[in-house]
Image (cartoon, rainbow, N blue to C red; front, side, top):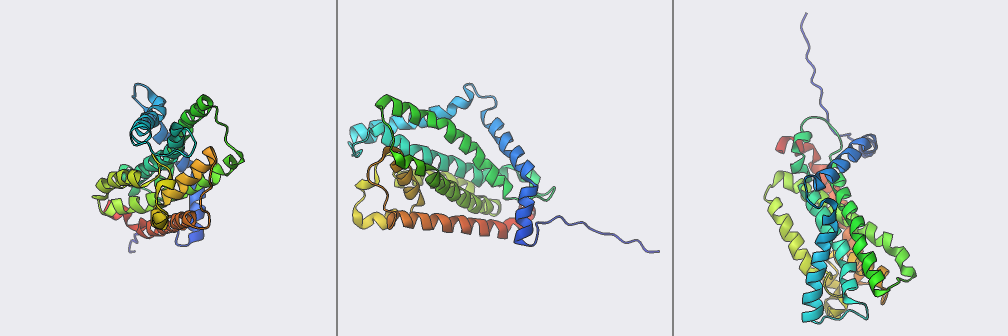
Length: 276
């Protein structure tokens, strides 16, 4: 009697419906990885969670001194420190979350070849740490509002919509770069460059009003322009973003990047265990 041998292959669900059902099934792993990353971020640090306030605060001081005092850039009638903070917080959320998500698969490479679970969980869970940092950093914004006795208008209720745009942008970019980083390891050197370059071309230390009108559409192809302008409008008021023009460009690019990142990640996912 001949013996028969069977190999069990664990692989992602073949249908999209099965895959998304698997994401819900493995939600416990998502919670675990998120909580683990939060603990690791502040483990064995001297001042712990205060780093979430100190880092944006130091950046705020530098931007205020250079762009506000030395360069004398306009603040549209809003205290310059408040203008910078309203742009700095969403930018720091994006830059931190994008960096963590982009390196997340490499950092968790030991998990990829052992058991099947939707790999989307790894970069998505790394974004949670930056969400916590963002929530803590809101202390700076609240403190400045109290200091300048600044009360936002009714437009503040639109803030979650612009933050959702930031999350979609971060996830899309994170999915794309994390999957590329598995196959092409030099992407880990490209990630800091993208973050640094993005800071210069995003309206963090200045208002978008200083950009000439003829360059607005090209300028808005940086999707963080729409996020920061919307976030800043919700907090400081003033002229709303150009929802029918430049903002729409940023929104469309954000949605396309999210879908492209998701599609590319799913396409590369089956190769992760072999490549890594």
